[in-house]
Length: 247
Image (cartoon, rainbow, N blue to C red; front, side, top):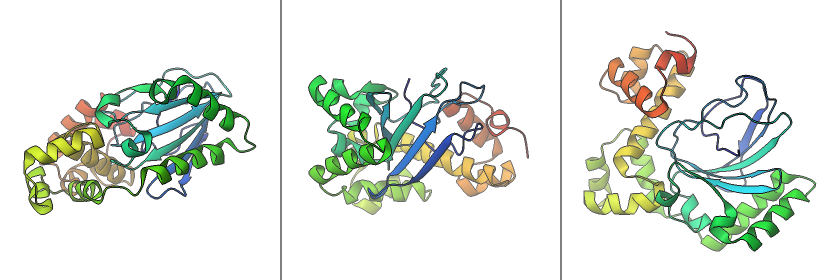
């Protein structure tokens, strides 16, 4: 099954690669399955959505509110994806994010079977499927127009650790309007988005070797216990298991 990869770092088998996309704010990634244990670890919530190609099929991975287990993959299977910055994919893909929350959906179900076959065929037949999928995304983005600056500011504010109330006030809207704008853009409300972004900040700090107590403080948690609870709720794993040890 195709899957999105979020901020997962390098796979243990060394098969995962990513680079900045020519599409502003997006990332291009590839993975070749080995079938070995740990080849496809759980995908963690990151606020992003992905457009994916694998072996003649196109998928969209919606925004996650919990860890997603991609399951076993066949050795040699190749996956290519474009990971879109939070809030930017719905206009490009033509579907509200909340309709795809915690789902992996075939492009045929979104754009029609004929369009999906044609686009998948273009990627299949290209000398470089990565460039072909990126070109597809760039074409959709050109048709969709520039990203909404309001949504970019929501992400920027919440990722800086500001509260939902502070974010709404800074943008000159009330909490109800912020909620209404957030659901189709991010797949969930600003409170959940803030938790997901805070989780990703914490994981990045902890992976750099910062002690858990300091990670909690810097990332914006009340304390280490709060960090541990959020990690368990959002990923389904204890913090030490997720990061492979304690510190």
